[in-house]
Image (cartoon, one colour):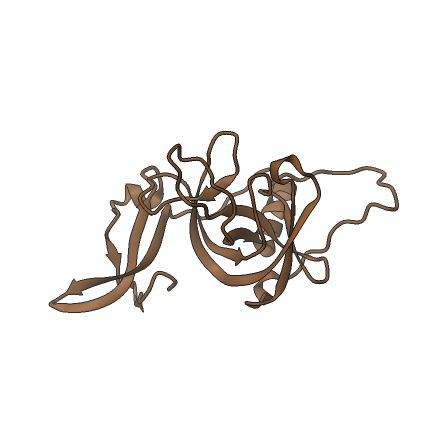
Length: 208
């Protein structure tokens, strides 16, 4: 994200209002605005398909972020992404995801695409992801206040899994990817480990 200061803006320039993304509901209509394939001002429609999706994004040269495969060892893990059915294609990253009132609910970030021989993107398949507006506002506020952004980063992605503990099968969060340079990687966590408990809290699934 970038923060831009505009001096003496024309009266016709109105800032977009931020909606409270914590109040989003599954099934709510949304619109994605972006610049896919250089087609500026493109708008697609859809709904909120799911909330708080943990996804791993991977940066590729000259392209947007895409949903990383589970066996990837690099990428950025977003734990509370918004999943939407609105078409998000290469060029949409950084565009607005807005609600029916025209308020910002998210920043388009990633698409899930089918694998290809050259590992390039295959385009939208009806699953897109966006950074929640509350997180985007927090980042923007930090940039304005300090000029940089600081936040916790564990460095893993997880999925539902099971492990055998004392001869009993228990559910937990299986580690799907680990970024080697992250805190999790340096702590010795590895792909395939299953987290069943953190302090006094039982972990029963990847979304726990």
